View (cartoon, rainbow, N blue to C red):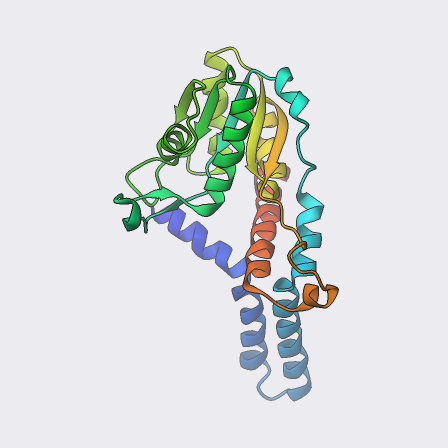
Length: 252
């Protein structure tokens, strides 16, 4: 848990809004007596904060790393569907339980269920361990697939992984036990490039099945594309997290 805490703390310094706020703070602290430099750095920090909260910038960043949607015909080319967890919500009192899959994970579950209904013979491997709750992400996702989407496909759990790298490593071991080497991988669009690369490095051939694309469709007027929003900052944060993660996990 300490390692996870340190990881989350360090990554928060690289992601919005803290990355921009740190620039502003450095301008204030380091250049107290140099007004011009201080002003430039503070304005730069404010500008980066604005950019990271702009829907158009978030959309373009997401486009850079998000693959195209999967062709449904590709389901016939694989031996399994692999579903990756995206987090757990510990505030689920309305469901009379201590934990539920969070909104990001639920979008992935819904798409996996959609694919499962098209090919009910494909086994589903759900991957994700317990971090902030007693229940593993895998067990929560399996419960949702069965109870909320009436999925009848065989479902296998990988309940120990806590990172995307471990998702790939541990799930690959499980898949190999069933002689499966080709899978459809379901995850968020922004997460797919890193996840696919790590599964390929673990010896599993992947057909990406991204979901949860960020769209500008809601903003009918182009002018609104440049008005900062909280949702745009969340998307920018997710994309930057994946870019940093790809460099650390895949390129190193």
